[in-house]
Amino acid sequence: MSETARTALRGIGQTLMTLGVVILLFCAYELWVTGLVTAREQDRLRDDLTATWADPKPRPAPGEPELVSLDLGQGFAVLHVPSLEGYDPWVVVEGTSVDDLKNGPGHIPGTALPGDLGNVVISGHRTTYGAPFARFGDLVEGHVVVLETEKGWFTYTVRTTSIVAPTAVEVTFAVPGDPKAKPTERLLTLTTCHPKYSAKQRLIVQAELTAASSRADGPPAALTGEG
Image (tube, rainbow, N blue to C red):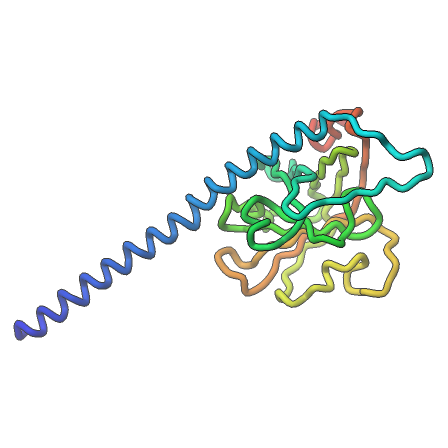
């Protein structure tokens, strides 16, 4: 082999090694550094919620609607998944923009709020920024998800899981699949990318409200293991 060929091969080898290091650093950033950023924001959001919920607020008179106004990026609920052993609770923020989802699972504005009639829709990352929905592929019919809010505890039981195209916005309707129908159920829809490390499809977990209680009653049986 000529000296020119050997020099060219050494150059290609060095380039490939450099490229490999760059790829490894990028993966480390995506899987580790972004998780640290999200963990810091989750701590802040949790502190904010603790302070907010500890401050008593006037409630509407009986029969009057309770109006809830949420700012984008605001934490307003805590997501518990007792059916996944070792799953740490996540603060849910309002909004699903790129910046919102860096801070935690995001509630799609305009969809129902926890406990309300209609469809509560929450999206989250499956691989980066702490990957709050990393294990959601393990959820099956009968598993439970609990949403904790200032108002109370709302336990949803999974009834279906499915894989859909990213364009399948019908899963987010108040009545999934029918934009004109009036809701008669209290649903929860969790959405995330599928498969892992790809945005080619979406994993959809749909659950229905099966129990609700006030915060004064303490955590529900789904979280305490009682009953």
